Amino acid sequence: MKEINSFQLVKVPEGIDASVKSGVVTVKGSRGTLSKSFKHLALDIYMPDKKTIKVERWFGKKKQLAAVRTVCSHIQNLFKGVTLGFQYKMRAVYAHFPINCAISEGGSLIEVRNFLGEKYIRKVRMAPGVTVENSKGQKDELVVSGNSIDAVSQSAALIQQSTTVKNKDIRKFLDGLYVSEKGTVVAAED
Picture 1 (cartoon, one colour):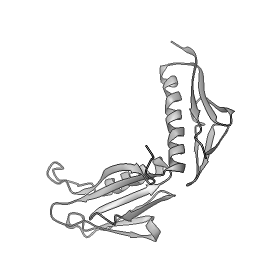
Picture 2: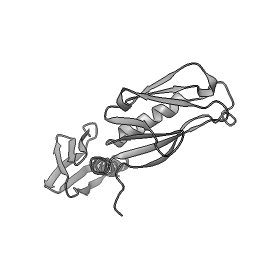
Picture 3: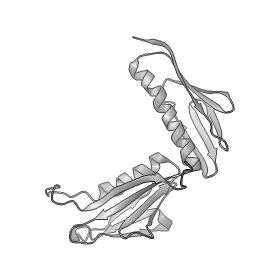
Picture 4: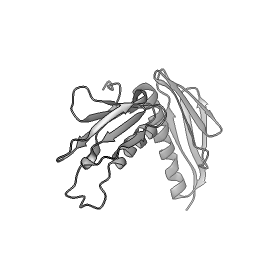
């Protein structure tokens, strides 16, 4: 059954400039600028006033109405990214051969060596706007940070997938780099 009209409002927080132009939401904040395109969805996205973004769908079925809240969540993640930033922490887990992570090109490339004693060097390039660094306080920990949650989580996933164990029982061979903590670069005040 179709619902005549479904909409959701997103409040633009203080200190953030947001603009919407033909399905592309652009957000400016203290940490930089992010933009995301929602052109692939048949939704109306516009700003009734300077501090509100309205996402609405006319005559949508259940699946299409679900996209309204999804888009609102994406927009909120843009706000969070340009104010607080996103930070994923990853830990190197190994039973015998110590995994060695070397970071080069100013934090945009990571080289994983000695994984399960293999000679092969795994190179993973970060998404644009994402940096990776070795943790200062904790041994065998990586910190992946950036403004876009999509780019940060994608980069963390690529690092994790680079250390997949092949042709072994993965219940026994648990070596690899795994995401241990998800948070923000700037601590949230709450």
